[in-house]
Length: 241
Image 1 (tube, rainbow, N blue to C red):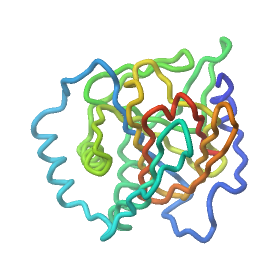
Image 2: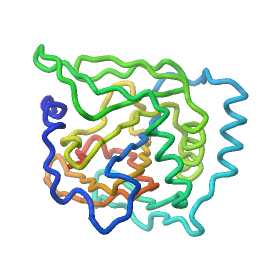
Image 3: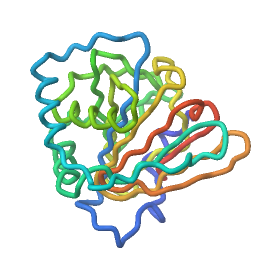
């Protein structure tokens, strides 16, 4: 766990995406929605909510979204892959919006007294100025943008869960990724849902059981949604190789 950020810039690019899949770019911005505990009152205003409602109603979904038929994990957790939710046009639109308008910064961590800066970039948004701490660094959430609120609403509609924060990750190529880890920050709601929207290049995503070492892998498509909930973080690690 301690070495995950150090290893993130040394990804093996082999077998991370399929060459025959048409994507806007080799880049992959992703939005990870979650719920922080102990906070209930949002700081964004009524105008932002109304704009998000309008954007949501105008959002074109696929005619037949691929709703999950079964749990990807055989035991000790729940993970559903919904496939592509957005039409190609809308997925391309949000791909560009996330690339161009998010407050991207290179991720930083302090490991064994040494500051590490990764090529991967992150951005952090939420209902309030939530603090997000890991590897001895703390980040504060920025106010929602209208586009993120629209994406949050569709995610809540599909998953039947609620979210109050979003961590965005930007991977510039298949050489960047994230090592094995679980999302166990103390501020996250215990056994709460974590929903990840992916845009851009198709990438491999893997789970590994902490005890049996069983692995489960899938490919995250452009405009797709993956949901993890229940005791998944207690028993499974995940990575973007």
